[in-house]
Structures are given as structure tokens and as C-alpha cells.
Length: 457
Image 1 (cartoon, one colour):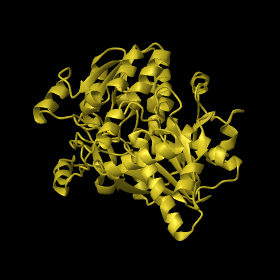
Image 2 (cartoon, rainbow, N blue to C red; image 1 turned 90 degrees about the horizontal axis):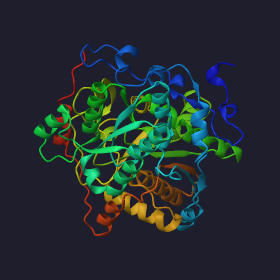
Image 3 (cartoon, helix red, strand yellow; image 1 turned 120 degrees about the horizontal axis):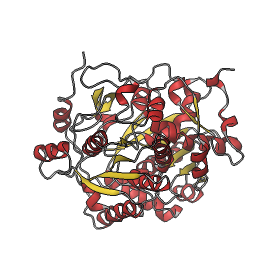
Image 4 (cartoon, rainbow, N blue to C red; image 1 turned 30 degrees about the horizontal axis):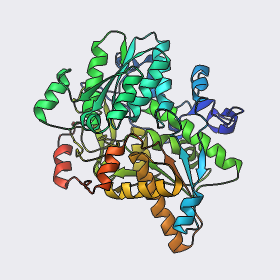
């Protein structure tokens, strides 16, 4: 039996927690396109990435053939604080919707960071510490990743410098203060602290920022500060690898009771949660062992899958990072400041982009007010106040359950509840006060951004 065919069950410990991460790229016939050097347009080599990323993370990033990576014991010990996370059947939601559908959600909010982001944050901090680094730099949008990384760095006694998208920095002061409580320094982005930040502010006066902006600033600081490396909370292959614990646990729980989902739904910004949730299910689909309908749900205000272009683009607004082939709105795309959640990245994971382009998953976009309507509905019925990001998946799951009511089909729906919304009350306040709007970028805005994509021969 080949390594890729070894049943994932043997990689679970006695607590049904994964002992290995699963790399879905190993089972992909069409591999994700390689990262390209922005100067030469040649595939990036490990040595070229060494000044930006930790050594072991580079190996994970570039490996598209190894199916399983053993999780180091120190990371598994940390995971035991909050894993395995619960897979919950939404009985109350099913009853309220009067649907024949069975609805399950994988809840990743039962840790202090409040989201799934801690799964990768602790891994990246661990590898930085093992390498003997002083600290790391990063970006954060809504704040979940920055919060998670600050916790992980505190655990390993690493310095943590966070560049937080300015509009989120202003809208989510409590998230910011949690980061500072764990010892991180938090800077609103774009800032005047970096050369790329100054340039972005000159080009976009008064901008609320974007993840692309914050990435540029964090990378600039990392490459110019001795003993530091840059870490990212989504998009990258290594992050999807770490997040596979979500899907592995979910599948183990479903298999235990003989449940096979028909529809799997995840919110999509850069791809960390969605990629982690679907990984073992997609692996079965790729190997021809089972079939699932997989739905990515993104915001209508930042619709990279549904309105973007599949092309090589810069991973950051400052155009200093490698080029990645992905569904993108253009690295210069600026989401509207009124967009109240995360999911603000201009592009999508290269792995998920390839799977989407191959027709192995589908994508939809939803409006912001509809998302918060679904969030409030879910909170009142199931008792959990969901993060705005998670609520995109909730909205889609409710819609699919309603379709089942219309058709009488007894489908099983699984969605990812990525975290809690207790630090997102400013957004909820705007929704309740009818001050939230549904800004959707025009075709002209998106075309203007896409027209600036790099030309790759």
C-alpha cells in the first residue's frame, strides 16, 4: 500500500486527534502552479525563500508529493488544550428551518484566540523557535490570526510584530488589546513605519488598508531585521497543511457514526479554513473513493473566486512577495472600508484555486447584510455568536437546508464554524442600527485592478 493510500485513521491518537497533517496536494493530478520569483519569473527555490520564511516551513510549502507530515510532539501537546474540537449537530437549527436536511458544524472557536487560526500559529511559532529566531512578523485582517500568533509566540517566548489592516485596527480595539496582552506589538496598516507603507499611503490617501498592504509591511520588516522571519495565517500551502487537523477530526467523527456528508461548506478569504476543512474529503474525491459537493463562500465585496481571474499575481500590494497563480482581483484591489469581517484578501490559495479551476469545487458570493442576518439567526437558535467570516458559511448552509425542504431531499450538510464573534460587536452594532451596507465592486473597479496584473511570458 502506497503512502498516499494509507487510511488517515491510523494517524489519529487515542483521543481521536490527528498525529499527522494531511497534504492534499499529494493526491492532486494537476499540482498547484509553483511560486515564481518576481524578477526572473522562474520557480522559487528554497534558498530564495530562506530570508522570508522559516526553513522547515519552506520544505512544507514546496512539497507537493508527501501525503502526511508528522505533527511534532510539542505541537500536539499544545493542541491538547483545545483539540479535538467539537463536531456539533445543529438540531435546533434543523427544527427551526423545518428541513429534512441534517446539519453539522465543526466548531473552531473553543480557544482563547477564538478561531481556527491557532492550529497553524502554534506550528509556525514552533518552527521559528526551533530555528533559533528572535521573533516573527505578520499581518492580520479581522484580527483572528494576529491574536492566535500572539498567543503562540508568547508560549514559545518569541517577539511578535503584527501589522493590522487599519479599518480593522479601528473597528476591533478589543481584538487588538488581546494581541497586546499576549505581548505583541500592533501597528495599523498601511503605516509610515515602512517604505512600502509610505508608498501605499501616497498612492491611496486615507485608505482603510488591505491584507495585501499589511503583508507588504510585515515582509519588509522581516527581511530587514536580523533574527526575524515572516509568517502568514492563510493562503500558503503550509497553512492549509496545518489546518488539515480540522477536516481530519471532522471526518473521523462522521465516520465513527457512519455518516457521509453530501455537502461541505466553508467560508473563503485566503483559504486556510476552507482548505483545512475539506482536505480529507477532497483527498477521497481526488482518489475516486467518494464524491462530495464542496462549496466555497466568499464576500460579494471581495469576490476573488467568483469574479477574479486565474492568473499569476503578486501576493501583496507592495509587490515584494513571490508571484502566485491564483484566482485574484489584482494585488492593488482595496476592499471597501465598510466590509466588516475578515476575508479581505485579493486572491485565493493556489491549491484551492487549482481545485476550483479543475471543477472539483464550486464558489458563491454573498452580501454582507445577508451574512449578518444569518449570523443573528444562528446565534438566537444555536446559542453561539459566530464570527462574521464563519457566518458566510452559515448563510450558505441555511440556504442549502431550505432547498432540501423544498425538494424533500434528506441531505447531510457540514460547514465550518471558524470562530466566535465576541470581538466583532462594532460590526454587529452597525448591522442592528441599520448602518451596514452592501458595497459590491463594479466591473470597472475590478477590471482596473486586473489590468495591472504582471505579464508572465
